[in-house]
Length: 366
Figure 1: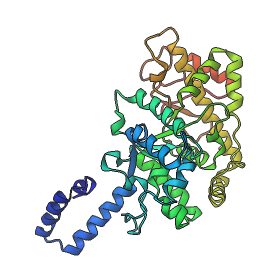
Figure 2: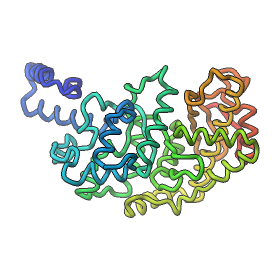
Figure 3: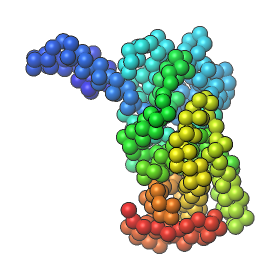
Figure 4: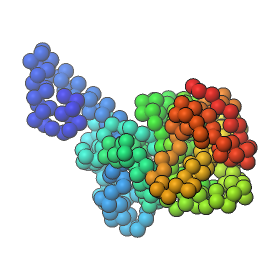
């Protein structure tokens, strides 16, 4: 029944329902079960990476917005308001009211159970998101093709009609538990930065909160950049120490107390949760995370020097896990230079970068 409902195969749904009736289920109980399945599937759906990278999505964004390269804030206004909002007249499987999340509006081939949580901000342009995700998709293509990746991307996954149109409110204490549940259920996070040079990512309270939750829960995070930003980061590495210092100064601009959200009420709620940990503590953890990421990017760059067959666009982005203890860093999927596959300690190039960045490089196995 679950498979038939997800595939929107009415014939198989009827067949499975008949089987339950034969086993003694009443019509009401089968209907109740079917509604529960639809609700659960809707809550756990993600948008296909293939769709996000497609011309189909780009053309929809351009046509609806009238812009060549809209931000997702631009898309909010035309996707959920105006003369032809998407999914407004469909019944939501979560609450049986009109207006659905975009993942429920999309055709079956463009949605599936979430495999990764995307940490990002609506201020990004479509080109920024597509460029960064395309680089990531190319890097993981051999082990996981894009058609098998489904992202928890709030723009698509949350029912925006309830948030913006109906103005439904979520209590502060629910925010932390909801995010925690999503992160633990999905288990993998992709953090999308627009640039390494004073990234917008570090000015938004939601993305800072998501990073802190990942650190707290020990969930691995893969950092991805658009092509141009990645090339600019490599160019700074090639300048040597001055370039690394410039990168350090840029990623050191973390101030969770001043971070903002699109909705002022969200900013208040999220900052209330951050305050429980301490703004200074959160800033230090985010700085630590960003510094480790830059160190790992530098190590990858140094490994590829002199290896023309390794294309920068196909390098697998580093995945980072940081324990809540301030001085303990766990590394996943990145053996150090000259180490065995079981040796997860930082390599020589990372220790060089870390000494310049001023961060602790001591590491233990989990």
